[in-house]
Image 1 (cartoon, rainbow, N blue to C red):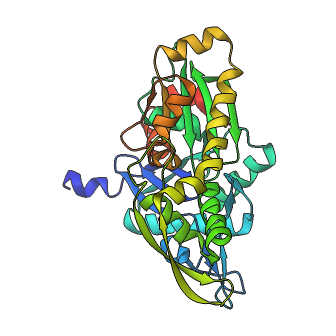
Image 2: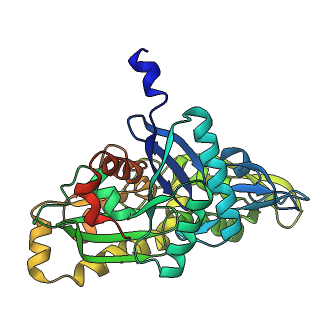
Image 3: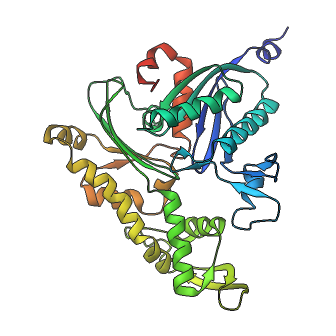
Length: 342
């Protein structure tokens, strides 16, 4: 039998990043085989109608007879039943592409979860057919995925800005010298834009539109790249109750995001101020590793560097560094075992 055909029958371990905004699956020897929004649409009998990108189209629309759920909020399972159904759906979809999953999975989770929250994630993974489950905290996974030697004695500082949480950690010898999680990140930026459009322009917009505005013309005070840009934003006029649109500028959206961005930056600077001087000196000799989808907002790395006075560096793919880090542990499981949360 040809080697290529033989590989189709060899069971492969799985890494999964069950994120607030997106869920990614990494298959050992293959790489990322699925990347989809963490959304599931259910009928009145709690059966899955759709999930991922297809279900995400319903967000903010409230179609009759359909319950559209984001199972995770701030990195924590808010609706266990929906999370289990979503996880089963994405795993089944990935298995249809690559039907070679083993029973081992490395599941990425936010840091500082309670034991109850960890148990709920373990149960969801068991429901999806996995029996050997290892939990890897996202900020540790992000560091591994970005190429940081987490086993070295020299400390590394990692900031992971996801959809629901901003996590800050100082890592050395596969352990945390410091770790803190704050539940403000990319989702709060989207909400800030929606609130701004409602208050300033009398236009109600949904989460998908808010996110699109953020990526198309959003920025921080450290960037003028889209400052003078304009964008037509469609929504519902709250007075006339009819579909309408407004023209907004990059300057307005920067203003809309300013407070939320400041809170995210403060979550990092507060952590740095809590570190002992010797640890800060070690970090200043290297850089702050900035990762996660929220870090891709224009000007964010420059603003963080300006506010902290410490060099900021980013991996090639901040959106996927968490699942890629978890994927790396699959090939050297014993070596990375001290890093697992369970």
